[in-house]
Amino acid sequence: MCGIIGYVGKKEKKKILLDGLQELEYRGYDSAGIAIIENQRLKHFKAIGKLENLREKTKKYESSNFGIAIGHTRWATHGKPTELNAHPHLGKYSFVVHNGIIENYQEIKAELQNKGITFLSQTDSETIVHLFESDYEKNRDSFQAFTNTINRLDGAYATLLITEVEEETIFFAKNGSPMLIGFSGEDIYFASSDTPIIRKATEVYYLEDGEYGYSKDGNVTLFNQEGEKSFIKKPLTTNKASAQKDSFRFFMEKEIYEQGRVMGETMMGRVLDNSINFDELEKSLFENITNIKICACGTSYHSALTGAYLLERIAKIPCQVEIASEFRYKEPLLQASTLFITISQSGETADTLEALKMAKRAGLKSLSICNVDNSSIVRESDNAILTRAGIEKGVASTKAFATQTMVLWMFTLYVAQLKKSITQEQLQTEINAMIHTPKALLVTDKLHAKLHRLSKRYLHGHGFFFIGRDIFFPLALEGALKLKEISYLHAEGYPAGEMKHGPIALADSELFTIALMPSSMQYEKIKSNVEELSARDATILAISPKPFELADDCIRTKYSSHPMLEFFEMMVATQLLALEISIRLGNDVDMPRNLAKSVTVE
Ligand code: M6R
Image (cartoon, rainbow, N blue to C red; front, side, top):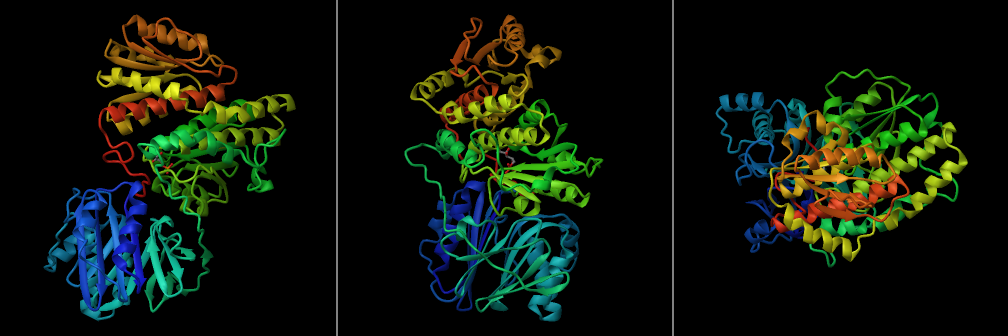
């Protein structure tokens, strides 16, 4: 989703901005822009589409004296992806970049328009710059004007503002959308996540909601509702983990191949010879806890659903799963005996973060399962388990899902140990299976070649149904989501036993059914469900370790002894299927249309 970068200092600013935006590119965007003030000269450039377009437009421009600079990648929410709607937004002498959504922008816009102010864009963000200038023109105090401006805003924002009337200062504010400040000597950086400033800044401060201020002369002055406040910088990691595609065609492809290796990281120090250990969890976490609620969005929601099956079956603890955007407004009845778990790859998903804040306000203990340390969700949670998948650049999540699911499996065993709801023998069986997971995730040349060949038969038709039972139902949901995200073909995930209650009406030879048929879990049941579809002429692609004579196509998996090993092996097959279909259709696998990697608006 939208990305922000800002800089105050003497270095070449265009490069800092464009390289910073490049690091944020994987999050998804449809236009980009930069604005720089140097030697009393304000310059700005905007371009729609890829950053190359902006690089092309700025190629003759350089800025190597002291100055201030802001940049932005925009993922359209209010108004189409056009140059006018791209950030930075211009007033008469100031520029603003903004992430988030200003909920009361129409009211503010109407008020400003009544005063004769002209808006150039359809965005909510443009109101910030006009509000600022209209206040400044009354009081001639730029910081007061900025403070008054942000006090008028409802909704979520991370914003930077520069103005010719204060040409050595960047004003900043954060509420609900992430923003951090990086420090390196006299150089000050701003960014919506730490990736663009790693190895540039040495220290960092992650702004809290409600904080705002300005940066000038190599210093940052910070305020919140109580007034000026001090803050403590933290060392910034130098580990960029900046993903390169290596020899792969797409990041998503590379990330599918990486899953076996990263799973080793996820398990390290946690899966011991005969127990599961989470050093990061408070020993008292489970005191007075009788049940669990997991809240997440998208792919993370699918791993949550998988985890709920495991937690109830193995750890014998009631577990409910909620879609974060639904949970926020359903006026849920929350009890202090519930452990509230959020799952998020990015740790910045607005709906999940707000759900977590709600649960905390209601007094619940919280735990997040997340891939990004220091993200908003991790910082907001009482406890966090990092999934250690490494940076995931493909918008369609793969290794994040795999590692979230592994963490939930480990966590289940950890809870089962605490609650003594598992025998040592059962625990040992689970651990033995767990240790085999990296092998189940291996992508062999044979498997990839088979999916490449098969994919050409699945490019048309009127839709896909991914079906499975038990934990293979959330895997079916995830398989369908992967396919629709990157192929733009219609796909649904369905519980196999539910097809006969309606969707079977769609069955004909143009309905593609991807049947997840594990041998270690309800094989006979799912087999009958698939037979019902086959009898109605649906085209069946069976993914199973067993032969299935009614299948039109078959991916024969290797593992058949443990449901989780079957789960992970089948997951890889569905990911590769989506990848190969998308490549054949000529789509941008890593940055599918309309999608963003990190969804920081509700
Ligand atoms: O960063 P999060 O895990 O909180 O993101 C949640 C969803 O936006 C995300 O999983 C989305 O569905 C992915 N594009 C799936 O591939």
